[in-house]
Length: 235
Ligand SMILES: *Cc1c(COP(=O)(O)O)cnc(C)c1O
Image (cartoon, rainbow, N blue to C red):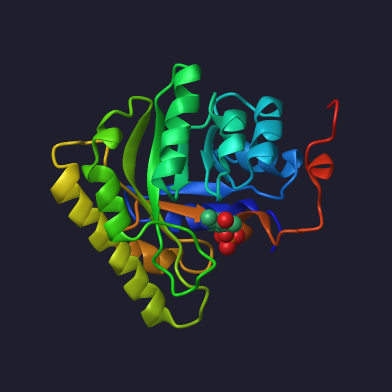
């Protein structure tokens, strides 16, 4: 299975009503993204700021670019002018930096709070205490150039379906808790970004509103590729 339109359409058909598909195009060349664009996909996800910055001007302007990776403060400026949604806000400091950079571009950047739901230490994200301290603070209320639209999380990489399911259920609970306590009446706080190629069906059962699917659409990734291979200079 490599880049097959029927397969893409099967994935679309498998989505529950209201669930949006983010096609994760990291490590994929422009030509592959154009192919999936031509199939009708408009929302693409990238996890490196330089890669997203390089791809953006080469591709149609009606693409919605979602950032899904760990974001370093000094690279926010690469994506702030055009990013549609940052899924991966994993600290208050990062959210404050995004606010600062977005203000320079006179934008309000929609963001999701990434929660640490997996049992793996390698994954980033908030725990509830830390999120509450942020949301209770006056410096959070001062932010004018970011808008928090929901939560995101990644389950543990495991075959244990029950564990994955309970981690996704936990993220849904975080969402409900934050909605009731901090965002009731705020219609924009509505997204639960969870689910990847191997676990998106479980995520949808547990209330996902956005699934981030890469390899099932684009085929396996070649991590040896460099940015110059993906976006040839001077193209
Ligand atoms: C790479 C990535 C995905 C997509 O993973 P697949 O298993 O290829 O579907 C989803 N979310 C995040 C945060 C990723 O980094």
